[in-house]
Amino acid sequence: MIDGGVAAEALAVLERLGVDQGACAGSTLVVQSPITGETIAHLAESDPGAAAAAIDRAHAAFLQWRTVPAPRRGELVRLLGEELRAAKDDLARLVTIEAGKIVSEGLGEVQEMIDICDYAVGLSRQLFGLTIATERSEHRMMETWHPLGVTGIVSAFNFPVAVWSWNAALALVCGNSVVWKPSEKTPLTALAVQSLFDRAAAKFGGAPEGLSSVLIGGREIGEVLVDHPKVPLVSATGSTTMGRTVGPRLAGRFARAILELGGNNATIIAPSADLDLAIRGVAFAAMGTAGQRCTTLRRLFVHSSVRDRFLPRLKAAYGSVRVGDPRETDTLVGPLIDETAYEGMQRALEQARAQGGSVTGGERIDLAGGHYVRPALVEMPGQTDVVRHETFAPILYVMAYEDLDEAIALQNDVPQGLSSAIFTLDMREAERFLSSAGSDCGIANVNLGPSGAEIGGAFGGEKETGGGREAGSDSWKAYMRRATNTINYGRTLPLAQGVSFEV
Ligand code: UN1
Image (tube, rainbow, N blue to C red):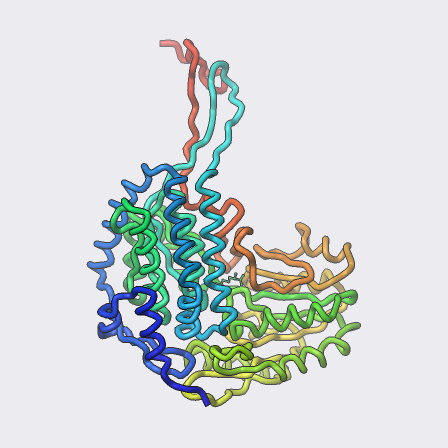
């Protein structure tokens, strides 16, 4: 039995986080907690006119912000990181209430925000270009990275705040303004983050009005962001279906897209795998976040020589994991986000059975109004249609393999290309997996699962995952425009390629 009172707690947390209670007394958008299904707020949605006005304000803010020295822009992000540290417990709690994440994952999500802020502060003293050898004497050639403009951010319910921060922290130090359309399922955490941003901006002093704003609403508000001529970049996280609409619309007006779409991530358990590590790695990656990460492990290829030692242990782990109220510290699997997610899971399990699968788990656990399920382990005779499709729920399809090249080919034979992993102690196998003939994903790991990436690396994937990269490495370049500059400090005008043009 789960206690009610989620709405009351949400309101108390929102108040501590400085969210204007008036904003939570709107009308049309009903926000429910997946913990109990209780309604926790009714919000007013932005209309398209208001959304366009916010974008115009963000553009005006950008024109000022781009002239502020980058390390000074970093100071604002440093202050945001401080606010996030101070509010970590409250914001994490709100993530738990609104997205249903377990306590440790809610805290981890806010930690990921703090980490990217730290990263962006350091980056604000870099943002470096190259000096390049020129073929002309008394010339110098270099590249300069300049702020780009308003950065639109569209985020999903499953990482309701961290995805904003990967984009916003980089965009802000790069000299851009940001306009955020969070998922309609998780608008409260977005309002809370905006409130923390406003606190940081007040301490900073002199940040232009409209530098960061939130648009509450559904698809039509997202479309304003995607179609507005003053938004040169939209970073969108969500389904491949969403990406298929957003990508071409942005391309149609030559705006940039960072797309982070579906994943159908696999792991290979090789004959030499350390099975203790593999069990833990697979359990977290497949069942963590109730299977609702884009990096969630969905396909497992187990070498036939270890299958009998590995599978019974994995089944035991599946049977013992505690599913329930995500606020309780011994819960490892919280609720699915909503009824649609539950139905999608049940449909996929039916299809798996029809395609020869043998299902363990997957049944509903009846708890006060939430959609709780036991994670499902499905032994499949092969990689059938349902396995090649991403179902955003805790379903792990298990298949046997004999030969590593065959397993790599199967792992790559899906439309998505986000994350992947192999458990092996054989160095040749590990290197083969990481090589150009190995995993075709944006993320490939050895001896750890495919989920739970750190912010220091570039995050994103290939094929239907959309090709975008966020967070670390050189992802910041997508938020800036590059200028190549050639300077002639001589008294003659030699032309490139030896061209002669005497007038
Ligand atoms: C997502 O699910 O959209 O690597 C992002 C991970 C997290 C981010 C997931 N750091 O699983």
